[in-house]
Image (tube, rainbow, N blue to C red):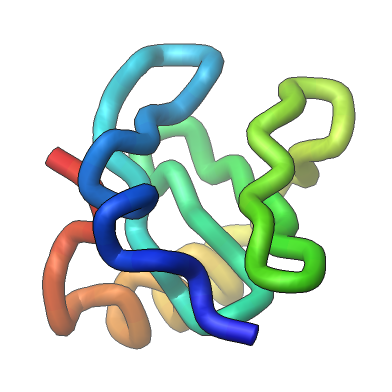
Length: 73
């Protein structure tokens, strides 16, 4: 299930309040902090405790996949 584009336009990282990259239908990513937030059934779970750290290799992959455009600004 895709995340609503209107919702994506207002979302921000709960840690640094910056924009997030939509990597795919299951992940929103903060490239500044290397933190990935899950999307469950089309609903972003923007809880700091539910985010996970991302390795350098996965960071590069996420940034390239999300490079089509920032999910939020």
